[in-house]
Length: 449
Image (cartoon, rainbow, N blue to C red; front, top):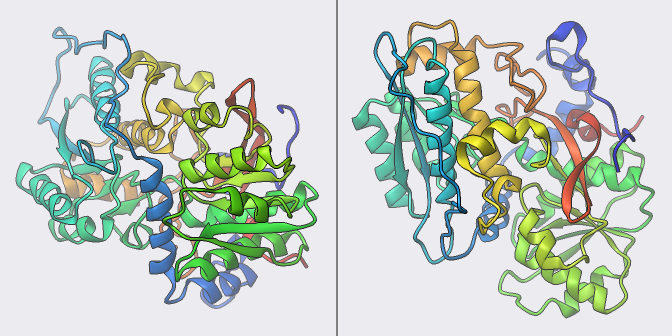
Protein backbone atom coordinates (compact mmCIF):
# COMPACT_ATOMS: atom_id res chain seq x y z
CA UNK A 1 0.00 0.00 0.00
CA UNK A 2 2.83 2.39 0.70
CA UNK A 3 5.37 3.66 -1.76
CA UNK A 4 2.99 4.43 -4.62
CA UNK A 5 1.90 7.99 -5.19
CA UNK A 6 -1.42 8.33 -6.94
CA UNK A 7 -3.14 11.43 -8.27
CA UNK A 8 -1.42 14.77 -8.43
CA UNK A 9 1.36 15.09 -5.85
CA UNK A 10 1.22 18.28 -3.85
CA UNK A 11 4.06 20.71 -4.47
CA UNK A 12 5.27 23.17 -1.87
CA UNK A 13 7.40 25.80 -3.63
CA UNK A 14 9.63 27.83 -1.37
CA UNK A 15 8.15 26.19 1.72
CA UNK A 16 5.00 28.26 1.39
CA UNK A 17 2.78 25.22 1.60
CA UNK A 18 0.60 26.03 -1.41
CA UNK A 19 0.39 24.28 -4.77
CA UNK A 20 0.50 26.22 -8.02
CA UNK A 21 -2.46 24.44 -9.53
CA UNK A 22 -5.17 25.67 -11.90
CA UNK A 23 -7.21 27.22 -9.10
CA UNK A 24 -4.24 29.38 -8.06
CA UNK A 25 -3.97 30.80 -11.55
CA UNK A 26 -7.67 31.56 -11.62
CA UNK A 27 -7.84 33.18 -8.18
CA UNK A 28 -8.12 36.76 -9.41
CA UNK A 29 -11.61 38.16 -9.95
CA UNK A 30 -10.66 39.30 -13.45
CA UNK A 31 -9.28 35.93 -14.59
CA UNK A 32 -11.34 33.25 -12.94
CA UNK A 33 -10.58 29.90 -14.51
CA UNK A 34 -12.31 26.55 -14.95
CA UNK A 35 -12.17 25.54 -11.30
CA UNK A 36 -14.08 28.67 -10.26
CA UNK A 37 -16.62 28.22 -13.06
CA UNK A 38 -17.15 24.53 -12.36
CA UNK A 39 -17.60 25.08 -8.64
CA UNK A 40 -19.95 28.01 -9.24
CA UNK A 41 -22.34 25.69 -11.06
CA UNK A 42 -22.82 23.45 -8.05
CA UNK A 43 -22.25 25.70 -5.05
CA UNK A 44 -24.40 28.70 -5.77
CA UNK A 45 -27.63 28.33 -3.73
CA UNK A 46 -26.94 24.64 -3.03
CA UNK A 47 -24.47 24.60 -0.17
CA UNK A 48 -27.18 24.23 2.45
CA UNK A 49 -28.19 20.92 0.92
CA UNK A 50 -24.61 19.69 0.80
CA UNK A 51 -24.20 20.62 4.44
CA UNK A 52 -27.33 18.64 5.30
CA UNK A 53 -25.79 15.58 3.69
CA UNK A 54 -22.58 16.04 5.68
CA UNK A 55 -24.61 16.32 8.88
CA UNK A 56 -26.35 13.02 8.23
CA UNK A 57 -23.18 11.20 7.25
CA UNK A 58 -21.02 12.39 10.13
CA UNK A 59 -23.58 12.60 12.92
CA UNK A 60 -25.08 9.19 12.20
CA UNK A 61 -21.57 7.81 12.23
CA UNK A 62 -21.28 8.91 15.85
CA UNK A 63 -24.11 6.93 17.40
CA UNK A 64 -23.87 4.95 20.59
CA UNK A 65 -23.79 5.01 24.34
CA UNK A 66 -21.17 7.67 24.92
CA UNK A 67 -18.11 5.58 25.81
CA UNK A 68 -15.41 8.19 26.34
CA UNK A 69 -12.65 5.80 25.32
CA UNK A 70 -10.49 6.28 28.41
CA UNK A 71 -9.11 2.71 28.33
CA UNK A 72 -6.88 1.75 31.27
CA UNK A 73 -4.68 4.83 31.05
CA UNK A 74 -3.26 7.24 33.59
CA UNK A 75 -3.20 10.66 31.99
CA UNK A 76 -0.33 13.08 32.54
CA UNK A 77 -1.06 15.96 34.90
CA UNK A 78 -0.01 19.57 34.60
CA UNK A 79 3.40 20.18 36.13
CA UNK A 80 2.94 22.52 39.10
CA UNK A 81 6.55 23.70 38.75
CA UNK A 82 5.93 25.30 35.35
CA UNK A 83 5.45 29.05 35.66
CA UNK A 84 3.62 31.33 33.25
CA UNK A 85 3.69 35.02 32.36
CA UNK A 86 0.86 37.32 31.44
CA UNK A 87 -2.84 36.54 31.46
CA UNK A 88 -4.06 33.00 30.75
CA UNK A 89 -5.60 32.25 27.37
CA UNK A 90 -9.01 30.66 27.78
CA UNK A 91 -10.63 28.62 24.99
CA UNK A 92 -13.68 26.38 24.68
CA UNK A 93 -14.20 22.94 23.17
CA UNK A 94 -17.78 21.71 22.86
CA UNK A 95 -19.10 18.36 21.76
CA UNK A 96 -22.30 16.32 22.18
CA UNK A 97 -22.50 13.46 24.65
CA UNK A 98 -25.02 11.63 26.85
CA UNK A 99 -27.56 11.76 24.02
CA UNK A 100 -29.54 8.99 22.32
CA UNK A 101 -27.93 9.68 18.97
CA UNK A 102 -24.57 11.45 18.96
CA UNK A 103 -21.81 10.93 21.50
CA UNK A 104 -18.35 12.45 21.15
CA UNK A 105 -17.33 12.92 24.77
CA UNK A 106 -13.77 11.81 23.99
CA UNK A 107 -13.27 15.15 22.20
CA UNK A 108 -13.08 16.71 25.66
CA UNK A 109 -10.39 14.21 26.65
CA UNK A 110 -8.44 15.26 23.57
CA UNK A 111 -8.81 18.94 24.49
CA UNK A 112 -7.75 18.29 28.08
CA UNK A 113 -4.74 16.26 26.98
CA UNK A 114 -3.70 19.03 24.60
CA UNK A 115 -4.06 21.61 27.37
CA UNK A 116 -1.81 19.68 29.75
CA UNK A 117 0.80 18.96 27.07
CA UNK A 118 0.95 22.59 25.94
CA UNK A 119 1.15 23.94 29.50
CA UNK A 120 3.85 21.45 30.49
CA UNK A 121 5.83 22.82 27.55
CA UNK A 122 5.54 26.37 28.89
CA UNK A 123 2.11 27.34 27.60
CA UNK A 124 1.33 29.47 24.58
CA UNK A 125 4.12 32.03 24.37
CA UNK A 126 4.29 31.86 28.15
CA UNK A 127 0.53 32.14 28.70
CA UNK A 128 -1.23 29.34 30.53
CA UNK A 129 -3.88 27.60 28.41
CA UNK A 130 -7.27 27.05 30.04
CA UNK A 131 -10.04 24.95 28.45
CA UNK A 132 -13.75 25.40 29.12
CA UNK A 133 -15.68 22.23 28.14
CA UNK A 134 -19.33 22.30 27.07
CA UNK A 135 -21.88 19.65 26.12
CA UNK A 136 -23.78 20.95 23.10
CA UNK A 137 -26.13 17.97 23.38
CA UNK A 138 -26.74 17.52 19.64
CA UNK A 139 -29.39 20.18 20.12
CA UNK A 140 -29.49 23.68 18.58
CA UNK A 141 -30.68 25.26 21.85
CA UNK A 142 -27.91 23.63 23.88
CA UNK A 143 -25.39 24.51 21.18
CA UNK A 144 -26.48 28.14 21.36
CA UNK A 145 -26.12 27.96 25.14
CA UNK A 146 -22.54 26.73 24.72
CA UNK A 147 -21.80 29.61 22.36
CA UNK A 148 -23.26 32.10 24.84
CA UNK A 149 -21.21 30.48 27.60
CA UNK A 150 -18.11 31.02 25.47
CA UNK A 151 -19.01 34.71 25.30
CA UNK A 152 -19.76 34.94 29.03
CA UNK A 153 -16.50 33.16 29.92
CA UNK A 154 -14.54 35.56 27.73
CA UNK A 155 -12.86 32.81 25.73
CA UNK A 156 -10.36 33.80 23.07
CA UNK A 157 -11.33 30.99 20.69
CA UNK A 158 -13.34 27.84 20.25
CA UNK A 159 -11.05 24.97 19.28
CA UNK A 160 -12.02 21.73 17.55
CA UNK A 161 -14.81 19.63 19.02
CA UNK A 162 -17.90 18.49 17.17
CA UNK A 163 -21.27 20.02 16.42
CA UNK A 164 -23.85 19.75 13.69
CA UNK A 165 -25.19 23.15 14.79
CA UNK A 166 -22.56 25.46 13.36
CA UNK A 167 -25.19 27.63 11.70
CA UNK A 168 -26.55 28.38 15.19
CA UNK A 169 -23.19 28.71 16.92
CA UNK A 170 -21.23 30.89 14.54
CA UNK A 171 -23.52 33.96 14.49
CA UNK A 172 -23.18 34.14 18.29
CA UNK A 173 -19.40 33.77 18.11
CA UNK A 174 -19.16 36.29 15.28
CA UNK A 175 -21.06 38.93 17.22
CA UNK A 176 -18.61 38.51 20.11
CA UNK A 177 -15.58 38.41 17.81
CA UNK A 178 -14.60 34.85 18.79
CA UNK A 179 -12.90 32.67 16.13
CA UNK A 180 -13.50 28.92 15.77
CA UNK A 181 -10.27 27.07 15.07
CA UNK A 182 -10.58 23.62 13.45
CA UNK A 183 -14.37 23.30 13.28
CA UNK A 184 -15.77 19.99 11.95
CA UNK A 185 -16.99 21.64 8.69
CA UNK A 186 -20.53 20.31 8.72
CA UNK A 187 -22.62 23.47 8.49
CA UNK A 188 -22.67 25.99 5.67
CA UNK A 189 -21.52 28.75 8.04
CA UNK A 190 -18.25 26.94 8.75
CA UNK A 191 -17.42 27.13 5.04
CA UNK A 192 -18.15 30.85 4.71
CA UNK A 193 -17.73 32.68 8.03
CA UNK A 194 -14.71 34.94 8.46
CA UNK A 195 -14.49 33.57 12.02
CA UNK A 196 -14.13 29.96 10.85
CA UNK A 197 -10.67 28.42 10.33
CA UNK A 198 -11.22 24.82 9.21
CA UNK A 199 -8.43 22.34 8.53
CA UNK A 200 -10.48 19.59 6.85
CA UNK A 201 -11.72 19.69 3.23
CA UNK A 202 -15.42 19.09 3.88
CA UNK A 203 -17.72 18.33 0.97
CA UNK A 204 -15.09 18.76 -1.76
CA UNK A 205 -13.75 15.37 -0.65
CA UNK A 206 -16.48 13.91 -2.86
CA UNK A 207 -14.62 15.11 -5.94
CA UNK A 208 -11.31 13.75 -4.69
CA UNK A 209 -12.72 10.29 -3.96
CA UNK A 210 -14.39 10.09 -7.36
CA UNK A 211 -11.19 11.20 -9.11
CA UNK A 212 -9.30 8.48 -7.26
CA UNK A 213 -11.85 5.88 -8.40
CA UNK A 214 -11.23 6.94 -12.00
CA UNK A 215 -7.46 6.76 -11.44
CA UNK A 216 -7.94 3.23 -10.11
CA UNK A 217 -9.38 2.23 -13.51
CA UNK A 218 -12.95 1.83 -12.31
CA UNK A 219 -15.14 1.59 -15.41
CA UNK A 220 -18.62 1.71 -13.90
CA UNK A 221 -18.97 3.96 -10.84
CA UNK A 222 -21.95 4.51 -8.54
CA UNK A 223 -22.53 7.49 -6.25
CA UNK A 224 -24.33 5.95 -3.26
CA UNK A 225 -26.08 8.34 -0.92
CA UNK A 226 -29.17 8.99 1.11
CA UNK A 227 -32.31 9.92 -0.81
CA UNK A 228 -32.29 13.61 0.06
CA UNK A 229 -32.88 16.81 -1.94
CA UNK A 230 -29.12 17.41 -1.87
CA UNK A 231 -28.34 14.10 -3.59
CA UNK A 232 -28.04 15.59 -7.07
CA UNK A 233 -25.67 18.31 -5.85
CA UNK A 234 -23.48 15.75 -4.08
CA UNK A 235 -23.38 13.67 -7.25
CA UNK A 236 -22.28 16.73 -9.23
CA UNK A 237 -19.24 17.02 -6.95
CA UNK A 238 -18.40 13.40 -7.67
CA UNK A 239 -18.93 14.00 -11.37
CA UNK A 240 -16.50 16.93 -11.26
CA UNK A 241 -13.88 14.60 -9.86
CA UNK A 242 -14.58 12.03 -12.55
CA UNK A 243 -14.45 14.70 -15.26
CA UNK A 244 -11.03 15.80 -13.98
CA UNK A 245 -9.80 12.35 -15.02
CA UNK A 246 -11.72 12.29 -18.31
CA UNK A 247 -14.30 9.86 -16.96
CA UNK A 248 -18.05 9.99 -17.56
CA UNK A 249 -20.61 10.73 -14.82
CA UNK A 250 -21.44 8.34 -12.00
CA UNK A 251 -24.78 6.61 -11.62
CA UNK A 252 -26.62 7.83 -8.53
CA UNK A 253 -28.04 5.16 -6.21
CA UNK A 254 -30.43 6.55 -3.60
CA UNK A 255 -30.80 4.90 -0.19
CA UNK A 256 -33.78 5.73 2.08
CA UNK A 257 -32.35 7.19 5.33
CA UNK A 258 -34.48 4.75 7.36
CA UNK A 259 -32.97 1.65 5.71
CA UNK A 260 -31.76 -1.04 8.11
CA UNK A 261 -31.64 -4.06 5.77
CA UNK A 262 -28.97 -3.36 3.15
CA UNK A 263 -29.35 -6.52 1.05
CA UNK A 264 -31.19 -4.81 -1.80
CA UNK A 265 -28.80 -1.85 -1.71
CA UNK A 266 -25.82 -4.21 -1.82
CA UNK A 267 -27.35 -6.06 -4.76
CA UNK A 268 -27.67 -2.83 -6.71
CA UNK A 269 -24.19 -1.62 -5.75
CA UNK A 270 -22.68 -4.96 -6.77
CA UNK A 271 -23.48 -4.18 -10.40
CA UNK A 272 -20.73 -1.51 -10.39
CA UNK A 273 -16.95 -1.78 -10.32
CA UNK A 274 -16.66 0.94 -7.70
CA UNK A 275 -18.90 3.00 -5.44
CA UNK A 276 -18.34 6.44 -3.89
CA UNK A 277 -20.12 5.95 -0.56
CA UNK A 278 -21.75 9.01 1.03
CA UNK A 279 -23.20 6.98 3.90
CA UNK A 280 -22.38 6.80 7.63
CA UNK A 281 -20.20 4.04 9.06
CA UNK A 282 -23.08 1.74 10.01
CA UNK A 283 -24.72 1.64 6.57
CA UNK A 284 -21.27 1.48 4.93
CA UNK A 285 -20.52 -1.67 6.94
CA UNK A 286 -24.02 -2.98 6.23
CA UNK A 287 -23.65 -2.62 2.46
CA UNK A 288 -20.14 -4.12 2.50
CA UNK A 289 -21.08 -7.19 4.54
CA UNK A 290 -24.31 -7.77 2.62
CA UNK A 291 -22.41 -7.41 -0.65
CA UNK A 292 -19.78 -9.91 0.43
CA UNK A 293 -22.49 -12.49 1.05
CA UNK A 294 -23.62 -11.95 -2.54
CA UNK A 295 -20.11 -12.36 -3.91
CA UNK A 296 -19.78 -8.67 -4.77
CA UNK A 297 -16.34 -7.38 -5.82
CA UNK A 298 -17.29 -3.69 -5.74
CA UNK A 299 -14.59 -1.41 -4.35
CA UNK A 300 -15.73 1.29 -1.92
CA UNK A 301 -14.55 4.91 -1.67
CA UNK A 302 -15.74 6.13 1.73
CA UNK A 303 -16.59 9.67 2.82
CA UNK A 304 -13.93 11.04 5.23
CA UNK A 305 -14.64 10.18 8.84
CA UNK A 306 -16.73 7.08 8.09
CA UNK A 307 -14.00 4.50 7.53
CA UNK A 308 -12.62 4.20 11.06
CA UNK A 309 -10.85 1.41 12.91
CA UNK A 310 -14.14 0.40 14.53
CA UNK A 311 -15.93 0.24 11.16
CA UNK A 312 -13.10 -1.84 9.72
CA UNK A 313 -13.36 -4.24 12.65
CA UNK A 314 -17.14 -4.53 12.37
CA UNK A 315 -16.88 -5.19 8.63
CA UNK A 316 -14.80 -8.31 9.33
CA UNK A 317 -12.68 -8.04 6.20
CA UNK A 318 -15.39 -6.89 3.79
CA UNK A 319 -13.94 -3.35 3.61
CA UNK A 320 -10.31 -4.38 3.21
CA UNK A 321 -10.08 -2.95 -0.32
CA UNK A 322 -11.85 0.29 0.60
CA UNK A 323 -10.28 3.74 0.19
CA UNK A 324 -10.88 7.01 2.00
CA UNK A 325 -9.01 10.30 2.32
CA UNK A 326 -7.94 12.58 5.13
CA UNK A 327 -5.97 15.78 5.65
CA UNK A 328 -4.05 13.91 8.38
CA UNK A 329 -1.74 10.89 8.42
CA UNK A 330 -3.41 7.71 9.72
CA UNK A 331 -3.66 7.09 13.46
CA UNK A 332 -0.89 4.50 13.24
CA UNK A 333 1.60 7.15 12.07
CA UNK A 334 4.24 8.22 14.60
CA UNK A 335 3.10 11.84 14.35
CA UNK A 336 0.27 10.89 16.74
CA UNK A 337 2.53 9.41 19.43
CA UNK A 338 2.54 12.55 21.59
CA UNK A 339 -1.24 12.78 21.33
CA UNK A 340 -1.62 9.20 22.52
CA UNK A 341 0.77 9.83 25.41
CA UNK A 342 -1.24 12.88 26.46
CA UNK A 343 -4.75 11.50 25.96
CA UNK A 344 -4.42 7.73 25.84
CA UNK A 345 -4.71 5.16 23.03
CA UNK A 346 -8.55 5.34 22.92
CA UNK A 347 -8.62 1.80 21.52
CA UNK A 348 -12.03 1.12 23.07
CA UNK A 349 -13.65 4.40 22.02
CA UNK A 350 -16.85 3.62 20.12
CA UNK A 351 -16.37 6.10 17.27
CA UNK A 352 -12.98 4.76 16.23
CA UNK A 353 -10.70 6.53 18.71
CA UNK A 354 -7.71 8.20 17.10
CA UNK A 355 -8.84 7.07 13.64
CA UNK A 356 -11.88 9.36 13.93
CA UNK A 357 -11.35 12.66 12.12
CA UNK A 358 -13.06 14.93 14.64
CA UNK A 359 -10.73 13.79 17.42
CA UNK A 360 -7.74 14.21 15.14
CA UNK A 361 -8.92 17.67 14.09
CA UNK A 362 -9.38 18.73 17.72
CA UNK A 363 -5.81 17.75 18.62
CA UNK A 364 -4.39 19.43 15.53
CA UNK A 365 -6.47 22.55 16.21
CA UNK A 366 -4.73 22.97 19.56
CA UNK A 367 -1.32 22.46 17.94
CA UNK A 368 -2.13 25.17 15.39
CA UNK A 369 -3.28 27.52 18.14
CA UNK A 370 0.11 27.11 19.79
CA UNK A 371 2.00 27.54 16.50
CA UNK A 372 0.13 30.62 15.29
CA UNK A 373 0.36 32.38 18.67
CA UNK A 374 3.94 31.39 19.48
CA UNK A 375 5.18 34.98 19.09
CA UNK A 376 1.97 36.81 19.97
CA UNK A 377 1.41 38.73 23.19
CA UNK A 378 -2.22 39.53 22.35
CA UNK A 379 -4.19 36.44 23.38
CA UNK A 380 -7.60 38.12 23.35
CA UNK A 381 -10.20 36.90 20.85
CA UNK A 382 -9.35 39.84 18.59
CA UNK A 383 -5.66 39.03 18.87
CA UNK A 384 -6.20 35.36 18.05
CA UNK A 385 -8.30 36.22 14.99
CA UNK A 386 -5.76 38.78 13.79
CA UNK A 387 -2.93 36.27 14.19
CA UNK A 388 -4.77 33.63 12.16
CA UNK A 389 -5.79 36.14 9.50
CA UNK A 390 -2.11 36.99 9.02
CA UNK A 391 -0.83 33.41 9.29
CA UNK A 392 0.85 31.93 6.24
CA UNK A 393 3.30 29.03 6.05
CA UNK A 394 1.99 27.84 9.42
CA UNK A 395 4.00 25.06 11.05
CA UNK A 396 1.43 22.29 11.52
CA UNK A 397 3.93 20.00 13.30
CA UNK A 398 3.75 17.30 10.66
CA UNK A 399 -0.01 16.76 10.83
CA UNK A 400 -0.70 18.59 7.55
CA UNK A 401 1.48 20.48 5.07
CA UNK A 402 2.14 24.09 6.01
CA UNK A 403 -1.10 26.08 6.05
CA UNK A 404 -1.93 29.52 4.70
CA UNK A 405 -4.94 31.20 6.30
CA UNK A 406 -4.44 34.38 4.28
CA UNK A 407 -5.64 32.87 0.98
CA UNK A 408 -9.27 31.87 0.65
CA UNK A 409 -10.53 29.28 -1.84
CA UNK A 410 -12.01 31.09 -4.88
CA UNK A 411 -15.23 29.06 -5.07
CA UNK A 412 -18.60 30.47 -4.02
CA UNK A 413 -19.72 29.36 -0.55
CA UNK A 414 -16.57 27.28 -0.04
CA UNK A 415 -14.16 30.14 0.57
CA UNK A 416 -12.98 28.93 4.00
CA UNK A 417 -11.67 25.59 2.74
CA UNK A 418 -8.03 26.43 3.48
CA UNK A 419 -6.62 22.90 3.53
CA UNK A 420 -7.12 21.01 0.28
CA UNK A 421 -4.07 18.79 0.70
CA UNK A 422 -5.05 15.21 1.57
CA UNK A 423 -3.64 11.73 1.72
CA UNK A 424 -5.50 8.67 0.56
CA UNK A 425 -5.86 5.86 3.05
CA UNK A 426 -6.28 2.15 2.43
CA UNK A 427 -6.43 -0.80 4.80
CA UNK A 428 -3.61 -3.14 5.77
CA UNK A 429 -3.75 -5.66 8.59
CA UNK A 430 -7.05 -4.26 9.79
CA UNK A 431 -6.04 -0.61 10.12
CA UNK A 432 -5.92 2.51 7.98
CA UNK A 433 -2.62 2.99 6.15
CA UNK A 434 -1.39 5.92 4.07
CA UNK A 435 -1.24 5.28 0.33
CA UNK A 436 1.10 7.74 -1.35
CA UNK A 437 2.00 11.38 -0.80
CA UNK A 438 -0.18 14.43 -0.29
CA UNK A 439 -2.51 15.29 -3.18
CA UNK A 440 -4.14 18.64 -3.95
CA UNK A 441 -7.92 18.26 -4.20
CA UNK A 442 -8.15 21.46 -6.24
CA UNK A 443 -7.13 19.48 -9.31
CA UNK A 444 -10.15 17.21 -8.84
CA UNK A 445 -12.43 20.20 -9.38
CA UNK A 446 -11.08 21.06 -12.83
CA UNK A 447 -12.33 19.13 -15.88
CA UNK A 448 -9.62 17.38 -17.89
CA UNK A 449 -8.50 19.37 -20.90
